[in-house]
Image (cartoon, rainbow, N blue to C red; front, side, top):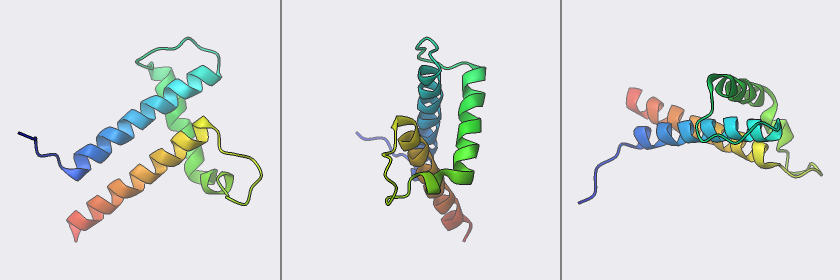
Length: 95
């Protein structure tokens, strides 16, 4: 029997997984050892990258730009999209 799952719960879990993936990617790009569970310092770096991306991310993903998006940029864009979907779910619940 399948278990009922709320869209909000699924999206928040996905956002958390992407946050961890961003932390791991930042650590990899910094040359740090691969860890399955990022530490507080790496999570803080992920949060800072997410905040910076929210400020300037769309410009970096301009389809007319000649530079392709790298793995970190794709993760950040995915995270931003999931957060937007979470906000939509919450807006629907409040209306």
